[in-house]
Image (cartoon, rainbow, N blue to C red; front, side, top):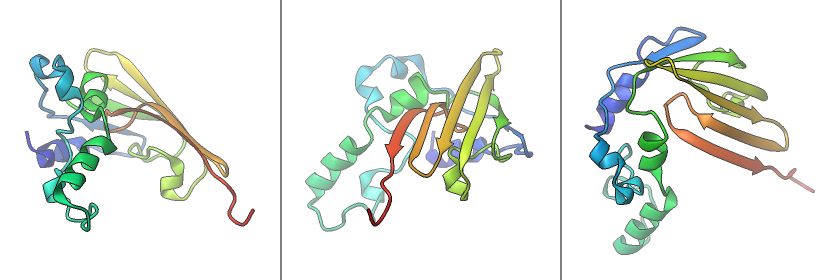
Length: 158
């Protein structure tokens, strides 16, 4: 399945405090059980399509570093993540846009709390915080991608 088809299915029915992610094509269990496949990145462009990625480097170095820059993408998107599943997304707290991952992306501070509700009824949580000194998140992002992040920020000029 192409990246374009996955992206098109992501934003259907977005309406304020909730959104539905529909028409997603499931990844086969044979892929999900292949540990080597976990290290790939099926949902993004390749290094050959990314002219912006270190154009001054040799091709072998670009390819090596591209493959190391986001390890376990397929694992986080499709094995523990749910990017190949249909679900509804609800905002429990924070910015009303259900696609907001961290509030500093929309020039705000504070918590963003959402939940994904799979067709089976299973609910998957996501929480993030954006503040003056720290940005963190944990859980299943609006895209279905599972992630954990913790960044400290230094004040400029100190």
